Length: 235
Image (cartoon, rainbow, N blue to C red; front, side):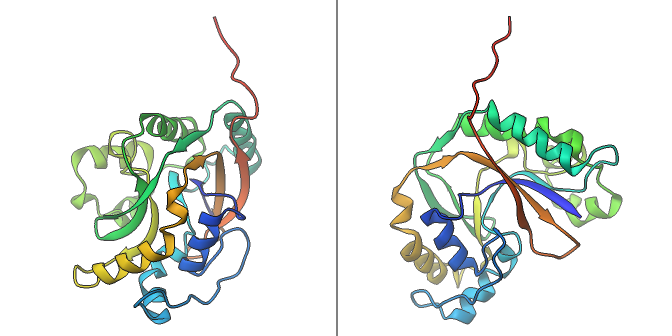
């Protein structure tokens, strides 16, 4: 069993509904659904290009999937998420845009957002005590030879290469796409998400996902709204 701390919009928000239809799965307990044709892409093509993203559900990674440390419990993790959320303010992304990162399509902030990066840093740091150390096999699955030195150090220290200075907020919409297929896929994504991406996106919760067994789809386990209680001031 693995856990992950993600951001995802509430199930009833338009962005979440559109993304669930595009990926063919709602991580809030709903079963896999048939995908539909979008623009010039057939349903089969959409299903093919979204296959790798479908298992994880629509999300932005804050604390990458991890096995629970032997001295921690799921209950303690959920309680810590409540405590963190209650004293952490909402960060608003003025606008998300479609971008291609290392070959895959994702939604990313239109411009730099230092407050969002600080928020992500805090999640990585504050919840690392719940993470079991990576096994040698888990490290090898990350293809360490292909990582930059900073990414490899992050992998060894924090369990994930893309944190702190190498972090980039993104909400994945596809697997890697060839340069020949990219324009068609980009056009389909643009047509589907164009209207909803005109609205700001509040990062207003932490969502705990769970993978119940290796290869199982990640599902929402609990949702922790941010900013319910002001942080205590200290001298």
